[in-house]
View: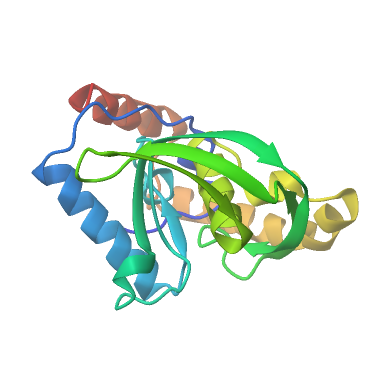
Length: 193
């Protein structure tokens, strides 16, 4: 398992809800958490590791020993956005890229944990921001889609570099073609349907 980078097509894939939690899913979650910590992240969505599932992990402290801050959200649904908060965001799939993003100051999230229990809570601050950022991933959106025109201009050249690197990797056979990626995602979805 590895983190895929912009402009990989899976980052634009709308993730499918999960129907069950099993040993394989627990293993996936453990690998995602390990990868998130290894890359000094505070959140990681399944499609960032080339999986088409509505699932993300997070720990706003970024510390694997802070167990109370570690969360797994399966099939999250966001509602009741209130207020506006603007802050700098980055993304493990766009290493080194940051920008100012406006998000709801508070948000309600309803999801399921790895234990199958429903989670329903109102969030604020950094936790609310991370949940919104990761939920965007599950809908095929990146934080760069929410930048102001000025913010977009500031990162345009960096995005071009990511795009060139992606094309080069594909030419070297390191990244499959779009139709192969789509077939792979469809197969993974049927496994968990």
